[in-house]
Length: 225
Ligand SMILES: NC(=O)c1ccc[n+]([C@@H]2O[C@H](COP(=O)([O-])OP(=O)(O)OC[C@H]3O[C@@H](n4cnc5c(N)ncnc54)[C@H](OP(=O)(O)O)[C@@H]3O)[C@@H](O)[C@H]2O)c1
Image 1: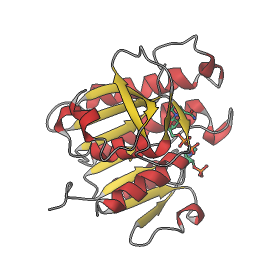
Image 2 (image 1 turned 90 degrees about the horizontal axis):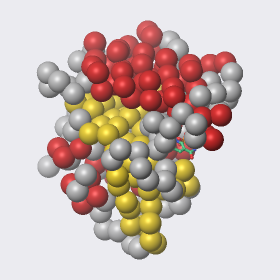
Image 3 (image 1 turned 90 degrees about the vertical axis):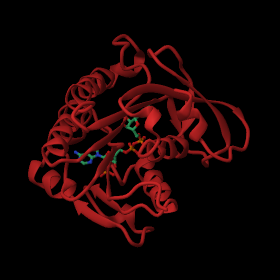
Image 4 (image 1 turned 30 degrees about the horizontal axis):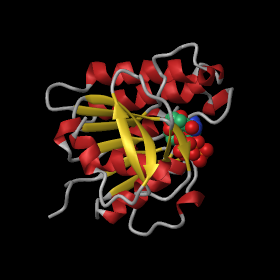
């Protein structure tokens, strides 16, 4: 039996974590729709739907979420100004997506955010207030999901690396107390597992990697949150 029934929309699908999310969804045989500005970076995938648009475009978001049972959002700013800035992407953009997902009856919302979002003086916040914008959209998600059969999970990873999945032990935490790094591939696996692991429904947690060690599964880390 499939671990998750229904279609999952990946937002930020052309990004480095987003691509890993699609790979892991395909591994589990889960129906996938990718939301991206351009299709070129998605060329490696067969059997996925692609929905093109920008996070600023509400009607593109409405078509993208239509018929999906869950959203995994890995979108993130990659420029200080304009349509890829922290305020437009990590703040207003994710808030728009959360509202549209909720209005269109998407039951589950999994958000990849960041460690240190509760620390306004952290050096990462010098990049256009990105941490404060992420905290703003996290708070919005928590305020409208987490009730009436709508659930959220907020994953706050440490600094992102580009290694293979399942190569490190992980450490999780709550209350924004830990710091470190983690591979995007492991973050993607945790986001996908969060579709069906009940323990992380309506939870916000941080995660970093620790010792190198082959992992058979990352499920236990989520069961222990
Ligand atoms: N870098 C770190 O060390 C770090 C640490 C903790 C958390 N994070 C967060 O983790 C998440 C994943 O990071 P990542 O490094 O894997 O991301 P990434 O590779 O930079 O990908 C960002 C994605 O956002 C998309 N995007 C940006 N502006 C958009 C817009 N206006 N409309 C639609 N899509 C837009 C990009 O699309 P295009 O491909 O079209 O540009 C891309 O798909 C992000 O939220 C990031 O902030 C990062």
